[in-house]
Amino acid sequence: MIKVLVSGAYGRMGQAVVKAVLEDKDLELVGAVDIVGEGDAGEVVGFGKCGVSYTKDLAATIEAAQPQVMVDFTIPDVVFGNASLALKHKVAPVIGTTGLSAEQKQALADLSAANDTPVFIAPNFAIGAVLMMLMAKQAAKYMPEVEIIELHHDKKLDAPSGTALQTAAMISEVRQAHKQGNPAETEKVDGARGADVDGMHIHSVRLPGYVAHQEVIFGGLGQTLSIRHDSLNRESFMPGVCLACKKVIGRKGLIVGLDQFMD
Image 1 (cartoon, rainbow, N blue to C red):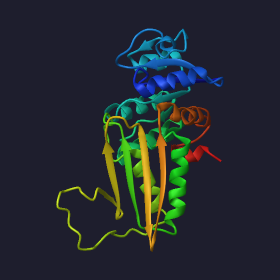
Image 2: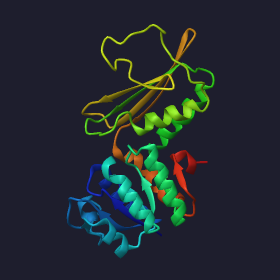
Image 3: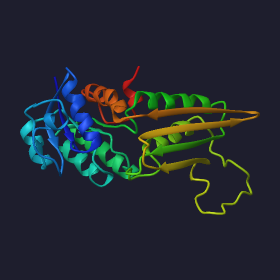
Image 4: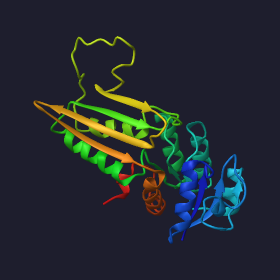
């Protein structure tokens, strides 16, 4: 049994993670931390009493519960501090919160090495989203003209999404950077063409009703190719979360992307 602590355990994603961990025979929930929430975590998520109550002090809970893994679904402003604290206690962070800067990722990599404890960051935990990114990278070898449209709920704090940025990074590995569109094009409204990553454009939509969705559109002579993934509910991320909790044990350093744990 792998001992798991969930940080951000009272949020929508956090509650889904708590329930998934409780239902997985190979995982044991030993802590549930959030700035809000009280009572038995299992009862709150509809699993039934589990004996783990919500707490507010991450450091104290780590010391008391002695987890092996900390799953973090908090907010960009606090995830770096949480992950740093976990690493210093030799607890492997499994991070689902996006928005970490390149400098913060490097700092976590350094802490990981110093404490001989792995750290895992997932731009997206949905298996289908990982497959979308891998397929997009393959397609970009043959159709390098590409744009990304990502659509999320209106409570999401960062844009573009981590998934969109990771998709662009993977495509950039096989696509030579170049400006797309008409060289003389102008934006009548700033931002109309979206964000620019190596000449690719990323467009972010934020509306109520969405969960997490992305379409990668390729254009070629007389043809287009669209690769799309839709997460229809938060349960779609849970198999990936549980997989990461199991696979991160025994690894080294900073690991980015669920594809690193998939055959």
